[in-house]
Image (tube, rainbow, N blue to C red; front, side):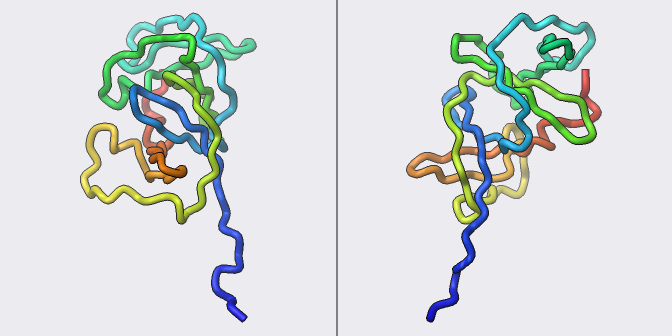
Length: 153
C-alpha cells in the first residue's frame, strides 16, 4: 500500500484581475467587496498613487491606483474597471483600482512558484508567487507589500 501523498493539498482561492495586459491574483481572504467604478473624490496632499476616497454605504474608503504604485501608466477607466475593497484585521479598508475582474481560481502550493529573483524592484516588489492556472500564469500579489501602513490617506 502506498502512503505517499494521501493528504489532499490545501488550496487557496484567488480573484484574477487584469492590470494592463497582465493577470494578477489577489488572495480572496483579503477581499471585502468588488464595486463598479464610481466618483472618486480627490484628497489634496495624498501620495501620488492615491486617487482619493469613495463613499461606500456611508463608509469613506481611500482608493489607490495599483498601476501607479507599480510604476505603470495611469488608469484608464472602462466599463470593465472595478474597485476592489480590501479588508485587514488591524487597518481600515482600502480600495484598489483594477482594469478588469476575470475569475476565481483555486491554487495549491504545488501550483505556486516563488519568485526566483533576489533583488525585488519595480512591480516585482509586490509579487510573492507565480500561480499556474492551466496554461496561464498569474502573478500573485503580496497584499502586505502593496499596503504600507504608513501610507494611508
